[in-house]
Image 1 (cartoon, rainbow, N blue to C red):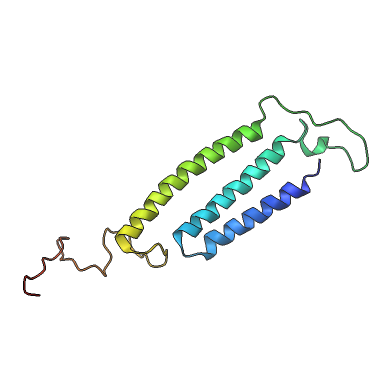
Image 2 (image 1 turned 60 degrees about the horizontal axis):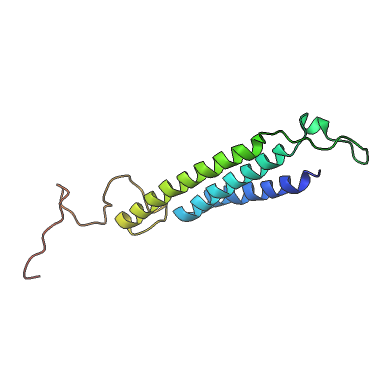
Length: 139
């Protein structure tokens, strides 16, 4: 079994995910980067579950015959992948709800625009008590 293909795919997914987290300002694109990182981990978990019981040391040498891959009945890499997918689904649900609330409160999902964690930004016109100012009838 060749492990180079899945390893390169996982490395590419992880690299794109890290770039998406570090270089992007849009909150949705940062979440996509986090999902790519989790999918890179999933690829490696499934690849590791296909290894024989002895791990990489039990793989036959190039050109030499050897034992076929023996599958564990529990297939722990695939079971862990299901757990990671479940956690990723919960994470993206909560994160998108936070992004939606951020957009409603601030009018943007750019992370550089959000400088404080309070309920209202300084651009909103509110009095110090936090209540919106009443508009004058004549204006």
